[in-house]
Image (cartoon, rainbow, N blue to C red; front, side, top):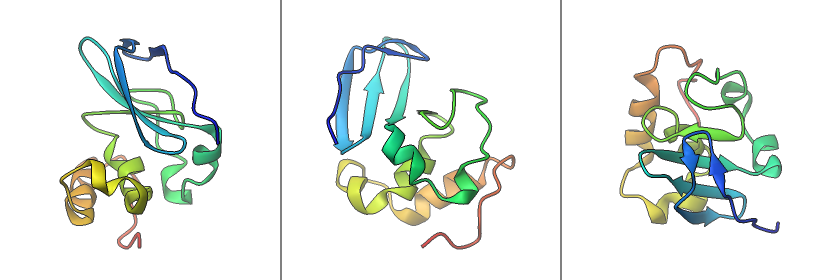
Length: 108
């Protein structure tokens, strides 16, 4: 899976980016950021994550850092956890705070 340089995000021009795993890129702008998923990674999302509305960023490509980023971090936890200090349980708690999500009781 070839990584491309992401120049623009829903939050503006990308100033910095960090590849967390193939097809999973964290982007930073002047004032915000989030996670970008490649088409291959989008196809790997579980059914519960697919109907999540694009309230803060267009789905399934972009996941906003304050409310939605926990979803791809949890889904791909085994590949990206070394870049973050939060546990699976902490990510699940964060996701459950947003009642609009149809989040399952068990994800693993």
